[in-house]
Structures are given as C-alpha cells and as structure tokens.
Image 1 (tube, rainbow, N blue to C red):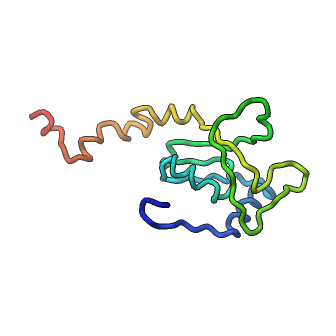
Image 2 (cartoon, rainbow, N blue to C red):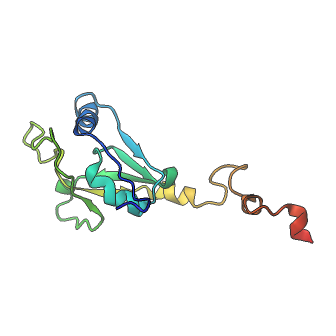
Image 3 (cartoon, rainbow, N blue to C red):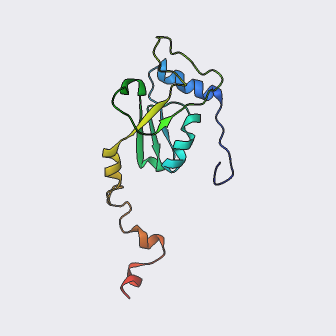
Length: 144
C-alpha cells in the first residue's frame, strides 16, 4: 500500500514493450524513481525488467544480477520475484532460464553511492550551504 493511498498502474502491454525493446532491439532500459529505495524494492516485481534501476532521484543505482550465474557464490542480497502478466514469456527461446518471470538479484553501484554521499556531489552550487536558506535563515541572522 502507498502512504498516499494512491495506486500506480502499468499495463501488460507496457511491460511487454519494455521487454521487446531490451531483447529484440538491444535498447537499454533504465527505471528512475524519486521513491525511497525501500519503496522501489517492494514495487520491482510489478515493473518491467530493466538494465538499471535508480531510486531516491538517482542517488542510488542498482543493476540486475543473474542468479543462475551465481551458483556457489552465495548471493545473499535482495531477490526480485516478477509477477506474471498477460504476455509474459516463460521461455526466452534459447532454452536459458532468463525470461520475464525469472527471479533476479540486485547489486548496488557503490562507486556511485559513495560519490553521492559527498558534500559537493551536486557541484559547487549544489547542496552546500543550502540548509539555512531552505529554513529561511540568512547569513546575517546566523551571526547575531
């Protein structure tokens, strides 16, 4: 359930078109959301498979992990179990177990996350010094 009480909707056709873009045409699909990571993770099972997922307005980036290739590596991260939709493929055609409904893991881009945690990650005119302006406190009031 959403904290706002609203419900997002995505059609089976949209899911299938995103799949086709990736599989038939080699187009990279990236889903970007302003949602908190915890919220995005709960919704991934209902969203199109993508080449990357960004949460928190791009502050965190995740890449899918093929669990079939992880045998013996002991993957212990978050696992997405896609929900069946009309037109979902049960087989990708080459006998591989990598289709619309195959569970997959996520790996966070820690280099990106580390960069985003820096004070000046948004550049010289980014966040630094903005806290007081946002709260309505001018520099001359701070010194008084």
